[in-house]
Length: 336
View 1 (tube, one colour):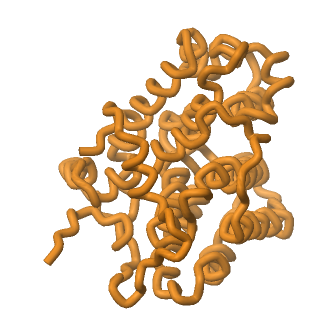
View 2 (cartoon, one colour; view 1 turned 135 degrees about the horizontal axis):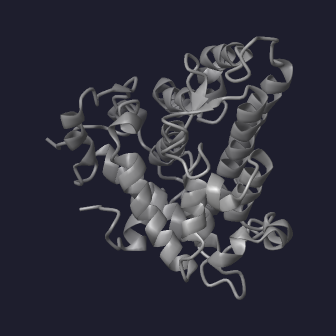
């Protein structure tokens, strides 16, 4: 079983989700790739998602999140780590999305929020997603591109509602998980996945949110700690475990945040909140204010993982939009 409340051996996660040997590949001929689609249509369907036996999507997704959580434990963003060619290509992909924002300025419209220029930006991604993913995936795995590209398209927000939330963030994590499962990303990429790729993704998403005044998905961002995101708080709190002097109470201190945000993802998130919101922190970010009273980063990290499971992964309004294919299947895969 793989459940969030349990302690899972790191070696199991490490080798199960990230290929160790650079020569190890999934033979495309033996993999029937599928275009991911929605499978959670009613609340009772959530039972299919929450099954814990490997290799159902829930177990693989949680295992991937926890593997990366362990990998960045106690490490600054400025920590030296290997940057592989695949990581560089993913950053280049995200740089392209960033450039498209510059090329698609907001339009004049009566409504302050949900600028319709976002739909023009999204239409370009919808058209080019497979080409972008093909720049990252080796040609011998080209058959996987249409499946993996769906998660990229799902990761940037909804073009109808012009909103963004933790379900879209989860799609990007699923995108990275799929790249691990086909062997594009490997064991020694795990720190760079969070610090280099996911961090760049955060920058692009924040730029999208600010440029097009995107609404938080759900009721006032109920499923995101800063209205939009959750994962950087999990991984960011792991970075701060056993820090010599920064404690959870310090993240509500403006001086501590300003001096350390470039080293820690959690504090970068707090800085973003203070830039976007006005008024007392305890009022506009009450959940985070409560977390600042937790005595240690280890307890913060454990609590956030439990909260992510309960408030995001087990909420029908979030997971109803998740899509399932051959790499993240909804049904158990049986051999023979």
